[in-house]
Length: 132
Image (cartoon, rainbow, N blue to C red; front, top):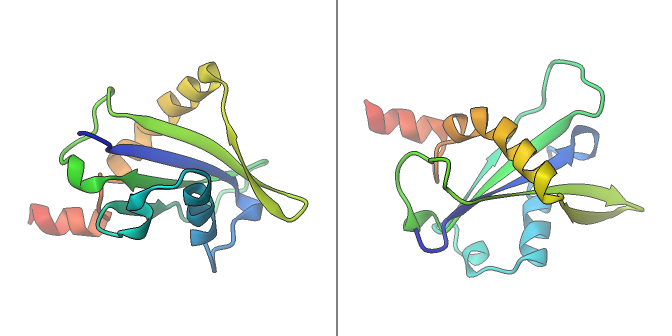
């Protein structure tokens, strides 16, 4: 599993540009340079669609699977995850790490649906096609 990990970017829904959702991923790779960024076979991106349910302070999750070739299968509780908040401040993107206690709490809640809904390194439609 060498460098395989899942990164979750939490973006305020009102700051998400669905015409260019990749801007947040590119910003992450600018902050954390990786050879995987240049090779689409080494990473996979899942974009959460907008919610139809009105919420105050709604967040969108962008899930980046890194070094996809280094792992196959179902994610278990030991599988490495990182989570960051990304916000616009004065027109510029900023990335924030969560305090460890908050990070673990968020990951526990988000992984309940995220690990199954976003299969490792592929889309749900690809996963369904493999099962048939």
